[in-house]
Image (cartoon, rainbow, N blue to C red; front, side, top):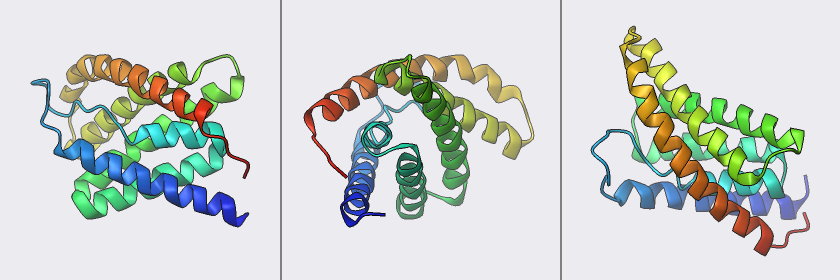
Length: 163
């Protein structure tokens, strides 16, 4: 892998971590627990479009691991990995078709992230009662996905990279 690509990936991971930290400092703006904007996904969508799917996966998974290690708990890691993996698979698959915009790809990622987290919670807690919480999280995933997708699209258009 080229040095320039590794450097861009490292910077993208750092930006994702900073966005995760900033988001953790923002008070909840809705009364539903777990609803977040997912600002770090700006970096993941950017990496997916500018660097490729493998690099986006590395950026996402390293960010999840480091943020969980620095700011979370063991449980945080399980929930985050489940959400990130499902989100990545959906975004990679949708982007590969070439039929969808970065906004649609981001919305898919936001919704699937919530599905992955609820699935992991149901598994870890041994109950499926949490599935009733999913419609609220899916709605927030759609809204956040639109915002993140638009912001990522702006960055993809404005930042010229040759790696």
